Amino acid sequence: MIDGHCSTGRMHSILLGMAGHPLQLRTDSATLAEIGGEFFPATGLHAAQHPRADLTLFVRERRDISRAECCFPVFRGRNEYVHADYGSDGSVWFDLKARAVSGILSEDLLSDAGVFRRTVLAVIAGVLAPALDVVGLHAGCVARDGKAVLLAAASGVGKSTLTLALALRGWSLLSDDWTFVAESPTGLRAWGMLTALKLLPDAVRYFPGLSALSPATALNGEMSFEIDPWSFFRVGRSVDASPASIVLLERGPAAGSGARSQVSRSDPEEMQTALFKEIEGQPAGISHRDDFQSELIQSICELPGFKVRMNGDPSAIAADLDPMLMEQVCG
Image (cartoon, rainbow, N blue to C red):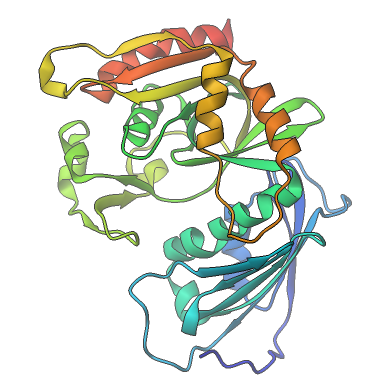
């Protein structure tokens, strides 16, 4: 359990940003304030703006030395209330109607910034998103000159490898897994999270630089490489961008079959069906607002779209797709 004694240390209050929305964070931990500011950068926002949500997070010593293998929380929810239980590492409570988040978390959980980003900050973003009229899509995203391309696919199709391959061709990497999209005064806006890129062990044949690393067991139990793509591969980073195109990825023939990957146009109805399948899930028992999700996804599906049947080397697929996307973004 966590020592619940109130801290007498100085409180830190900083402005955060999520998909163009200002958030206010109050915490008694300078480390948490720094990690939170990096994860939710307040790009284009200023302190005079009224926050759309309030986060209050305290950090305490964890007295129980036992630790679960997986740091992801167990959720309980009813109507607008959500509880994320981290066991001996603490809890986070959500009042989605009031857009208020409060929690007490352990120093041990905070000690690994990568784990804290994935298991706490990314969870806060996912649960809070609908209350901010933001939709979380299971999609990678790359950007160029402030314009974004969404790459949507089910798990295991090759979304992360293609996203990375496009980033290595000069696109900025915004997100490889979950991309948050919202309406803004200037139109649709896509926002990505500062989390590790996860690549399965066979990705080493496409990205030889990974041979210097050893795959490890990820939090979901899979063996994988988990890396910071911006530092390891030296690719550019975008925090947010305006969506200009969308690509649907499907599993194609086996790589040894000799067939090339196929790129074709995708119609709005097909894109809409695929995107609804890949919306960020919410804890059971929570009230949903499906109206704004439907309207926003319809807006996304009005963008020019492509369908790619994945097969073989993601670098070759990226080379075929690159000029088509450049036409949509820069044409």
